[in-house]
Length: 391
Image (cartoon, rainbow, N blue to C red; front, side, top):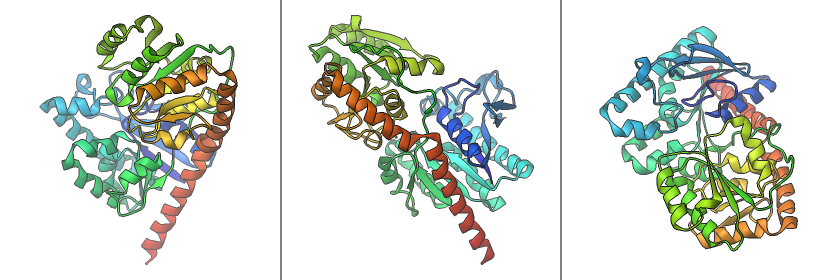
């Protein structure tokens, strides 16, 4: 079986974090007997063809080299809404991606197309999949469905893409409930895999250290983590991994509430550094709001580092509160502070939550589990397509 992945975020080199969960799925599927090739956008410094960790990648051009900046930064929506040039680049992006898909259908002859994020990639894949009469699998990861909350004009496009997809999958139950509003077909919950080999308990753990991982934007809830730190009686140190447009404001807030000297602003770190950061901490603070899934919480669980977060979005798929981590009401900073303190001040509880979390993450988010799920989805979609063609 050949599956053509289409994504606007995919690693640019072997250790790149961008879209690394999609690479992990591709590698897991290859182990399961599915051949995978990837179409992804170009960017300055990238070759048109490459091999990333054994997966063949085709990069499509969509603008003059200096203007190919929509992908890999995590700011596509902001860049498009900010200017006319951004909107023109997006239109060219979708058109060029569609042409690249048609080219790969002709050259490689895949059995199906798997579009990651309904927008822009699912939209670009509809016409080529219909023309070639091969199934389209569309997966929503969160940001594409969040787009529908703020841009009502995009909702008919979502219905269009989902309606022409042989299967619609979502990485959490919470996202599946949202996607169901726009899809006549019941979305399937099928999470992305975590790297079970790289994330594991290792070395000495600092019982007084917490870690936050994410973009410094309101949706990630880092402000709640800072305010929670100020409410704790224990002088917990917080590693903040990630960067974003709110950094200056957040640094000022930390200084204002008196915890500036207890926060280490690490910015972007190499993907290879993440396992050590997670395994060293006593707790992951994950105050995310409407997160699509929250794979970093599963990575923390693999490290036997209990995640503590808000009972919101896809985190409820990852964390069973009181068993594999702790969840508190969304926006309740005092409850977040108390939950974090209950973990860092009680090593026995931390270890119990950590062991249960690792067992749960291995069973639900391992590459083998994800590959088995998607292989079944592919086979079912191909079976339906063959039966429809025979009628």
